[in-house]
Image (cartoon, rainbow, N blue to C red; front, side):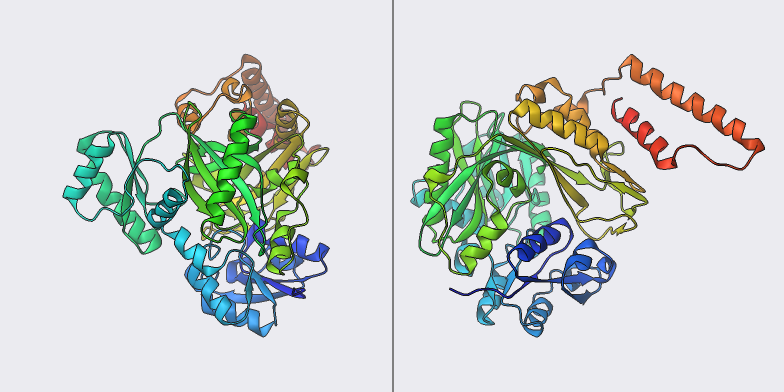
Amino acid sequence: MKKFKKILIANRGEIAVRIIRTCREMGIIPVAVYSEVDRQALHVRLAEEAYPLGEAAPSASYLNIEKIIAIAKKCQADAIHPGYGFLAENHHFVRRCEEEGLIFIGPPSGPMELLGLKTISRQKMKEAGVPIIPGTLEPVKTEKELIDQAEAIGFPLLLKASAGGGGKGLRLVRHRQELLSAFHLAASEAEASFGDAAIYLEKYIDEPHHIEIQILIDNYGHAVYLGERECSMQRRYQKILEETPSPFIDDELRRKMGEIAVAAARSINYRNAGTVEFIVDKNKNFYFLEVNARLQVEHPITEMVTGIDLVRAQIYIAQGKPLPFTQEEIKPQGWAIECRIMAEDPFQDFLPSPGKILYLHRPGGPGIRDDSGIVEGYTVPIEYDPLLSKLIAWGRTREEAILRMRRALMEYQIYGLKTTIPFFLRILDHPDFLAGNYNTHFIERLEKEPPAAAEEDLVAVLAAAVKTFHDAKRETTRPLQPKAKPWKLIGRIEFLRSRL
């Protein structure tokens, strides 16, 4: 077993901050890296050591394998934690770490390479007896093969990038006449995103739930599952809100999916933390989707209900330590919900909203956790994912968790750019969400609904506007000395706007 003295964090933003905090608790020196636009970022300020990567472009900074390896060796890091995104699932990066004697905090390069190709992982899962979605086990190579396979599977179906993820290279085809154009678009996007244009086909599951199982496997083959996460709240195949436990899954199905998830990971000699994702149909039949060979964005909700620090568990496993708990000892308590706070304008089709944060007030109180990578005065860059923070609420019941999340969202104030906070307030007020009656189509339907405009809210907006006008008129004869800070007025208007 090796005790780490220093870990380099090959990432940025809130996940880098998250890893830094666990490193400090464990007495490990955290080392940050940063691009030129992240020089003043929170993760740089918190780390004991920080090294520049150069230009802002991901290819020149956070995706530059050789530069990150060189920094790790220069600072004498024992290990590298990739976080999620960027190089987290790049088997070439893992192999370079292995070659240089650096411990990669995650699975070995072999299982990661296998999982990176969706068709191969589907083949392995089928061999292991894991239920998979009907579809092709090899990428389609010709238009004739495409048409023949599509007819055999039946419409609707999904075209999916073999090397893909995150909704890239993914197309839903409902009718035969859409097939060829969708195929060429998916292949083109897959080539641009992953350098691999290979596309395979899957049967489309109607009214699906996206359920994932968190697993941990140490170097001695001991494995556990830590319950499920309901990840069906998606916009354009991107998760935006997650909760655990799922209001759709019962105890028996939870146990079956957990056991299958562990068996799936063991079948490919997987190690460390990972997530096995499933599609579950309306009749509660479940099918293997993929394995995410890394820490998930939504991992905090699992931590909140289990009390297990997943980053700490990852580090323990990477050091060669056995898991300190058994399956029987894992007893999730309560309910947890996560909202991904993005720098996007929900009133303008979720366009990115980079810019300087002029004022920041983060929520707190019982059951509230905010995994944030931002500070007041920081300029959110356009070059990276617009995730600002992850707001998590825990409650003894689902109702309590929802009420706490609503209260925390109302407290959260970020001015200088647009955020998705108003959109989450709208979701949390929707009767279908409150009833736990939703699937992956919820957001699509919600965006077609006109926002509910309560009469008292309209009156309040008008009253606020009139008051602001009269206050400004009175102040024209003397120096402007507003009683309230401008962001407080903005906050009231933003909140009222969110309720419309």
